[in-house]
Amino acid sequence: MTKSIDILIVDDDKFAQKMIQRALSENSFGLRSAMNGEEALEEARKETPDIIVLDVEMPGLSGYEVCNILRQEEATADIPIVFLSSHTSLRERMQGYEVGADDYIVKPFDAEHLLAKINVLIKYQQERKELKAQYELAQKTAITAMTGTSELSIAMGFIEKTYSYGNYEALANGLFQTTDQFKLSCCLMICDGDNESDSCKKECSTCGDTRLFSSDGSVKPLEKELLEMADEGKRFLDFGLRTIINFPGTRLLIRNMPLDNMELYGRIKDILPVLLSAVETKIHALQTEQALHNYSTELLGSFGHIRTNLYYLAKRLIANQASSAQVLEKMTHELNNDLLGMGLEEDQEEYLLHRIDAAIADAASRIDASAIIANSFTDLLKDLRTIAGKQEVLIEAYNASHATAPVEQVEEINDDIELF
Image 1 (cartoon, one colour):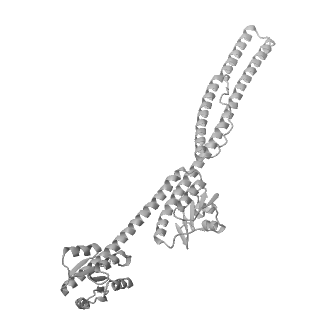
Image 2: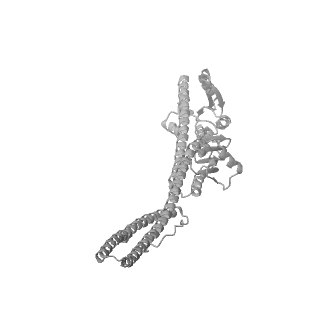
């Protein structure tokens, strides 16, 4: 045996003690003895034995009482106890079992029988220790699994909430509320720009706008420099209690990683990239929404300018038509007067006037297309009004979802204007 088994023998009969010691001495056991219950308790408390051989009938505390006391104390509660007794009845055995004994030997006993009982208890004790170790490991694994599940549910809760965040401030606060549950102090940098540009890939600080947020409300100048200078080629940058996690458009600095708890440290390093990936995805969504909003606003303004220009263009065309008709009428009147002074024959004059009238009528009919122009421009303006209305609805929905002040719309011509 690699470790000597410590056996405490408790019996007020010295002869019985010597018989027990002789039976066990050949097996390299460590043997101790006590003459009564009080000495047995003192010895067991001083150094916990592996097995106790305990006589039932002793002056002072009986074996039953000693066993009951040992079972009540945490240090001695699991020690295997073998009762020695001259009584053979079932009642005595049941009483011994009731107070917590593991085995029962009747005096006088055979040495081989006692040794066999001791060996069984040694094996039983070893198996119990192994089972206890397995149980503790399983319990620890179960607690770790439950803790991991709880932490994963916290991360999933944040991912679900990211859909409702309408700006960077709300997104950062949501992330910090999540990291607060892990008792982490953090600093977040968001690169508000084209994350696919070469400059962003080289260094986030070169983007158009770098936004910094902190779980405690303030960012130290050195923290800002560390975030800007962190090597984006590495996902994690660890230095002491601090860790920086890199993503193309975001960087997270954790100020107090739990180095004293490596299991928690490992789980946090697994969860934080998931959180930051969700932040990155939401940032892209916010940037896309903002770009679409800006495009819609510009498009709505362009529609307003187009409608205005079309209105005045149609008005100018109609005015030009009226002016052209007046020019033709004036020319007809002047030709009539000129012909009278030419001294033409009546049939010649009539022929020329007929040709001139026909040409003027044909030109006037070609110029006078006001009805067609009016219909064309009316249809075109109606289409523009419909498209502009849809754009207004999109912009209003965007503004409402982001709880911001309405974007100023381009001043438009009154929809009730009649062009013709």
